[in-house]
Image (cartoon, rainbow over all chains, first blue to last red):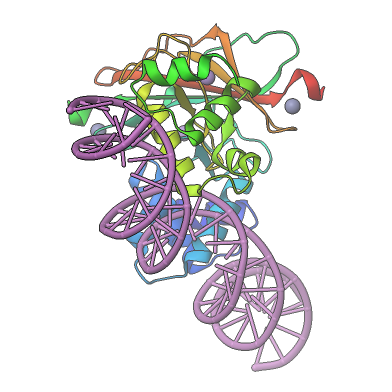
Length: 138
Length: 138
DNA sequence: GTTCAAATGCAACAATGTTGCAAAATAATA
DNA sequence: TATTATTTTGCAACATTGTTGCATTTGAAC
Ligand SMILES: [Mn+2]
Ligand SMILES: [Mn+2]
Ligand SMILES: [Zn+2]
Ligand SMILES: [Zn+2]
């Protein structure tokens, strides 16, 4: 088991349960983004679908993972940087979805560019999702 | 009925049907983005849910409307500019979702900034979705 | 180990999306 | 305009996705 798992859960005042350990491990291992369906498949019959929904919800609230918007009705989730916390996400990086293999990447080193909006719009968040072909699918 | 409706359908080689006219009219009137659920509500029992799905799909393919990604599993649709066509969308503008009223705006005059990705990523599209408070909800 | 609080599994349900096919509407043709 | 051919629609049936309440189980604290 990945050493960071218990740490992360404790730091966020979450009780250490099997499902939380397992789901968090999936994120730590794969590094890429995961959809709810991915987790459901990988975990087999190990725990209930509802538990996955609730665990993802909890992790997002605590700043352990963040959501990645998409245009195909299938939100994906990825690990946050360590400085995210409850109510304070700092995941202002660009995301990339490969049209070919479906993999979603967090491009941690590509910062979201500033966008200037018309007067009257108060911006609190900017999501940038690029798509195309990833390096593995060239 | 909006004069552009029949034109638009003919130009895209689509037969003129009640549902297509009505749904296209909704987009022309409201100017803002619409979700499937919005259309279903507004149209009452007028036509089947399946017809709405198929009409939206057809409109997207023909370049009449475009999808707007979101982080809440509810894709929205908005009218394209006239120079979009089958297989060739040119809607490279920024979108804004108001956290308060839920309205989604196409900011036609705010161009998507160029993003430089690491070597190996071949980008074909960049979506920028800002969120916060719109001018009406200040 | 006991107690208390939190998380889980289950069931039931709601919402969303897909597919096949007969009936209806539209377009093309005569 | 009437007939024919093509496309679209509505319906049914189903699959997937997401939500809620509640009893049971698990984990944390003592
Ligand atoms: Mn990310
Ligand atoms: Mn738009
Ligand atoms: Zn790929
Ligand atoms: Zn608003």
